[in-house]
Length: 84
Image (cartoon, rainbow, N blue to C red):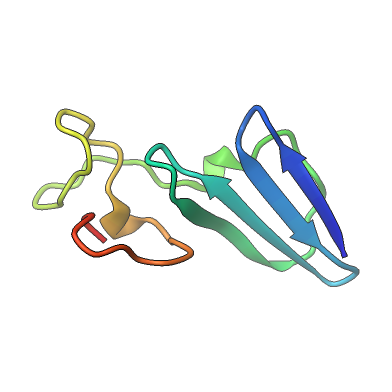
């Protein structure tokens, strides 16, 4: 199994002959899942897989940052009291 860490984007790409698993260190330090499935080629960043969008009636982690809600991100593990 291979592991590639992209320091600039804070992303980990774990892979073998069949699958890829891509994780990212989020703004708040938690780990978020970007992709799990059929093996994908290595890229500089998979950040385009994060769906950051303003959604009415959502909880947001940071005041005024309406593009970051843990409610709509795939997290490695949920944390109590953090909008997940």
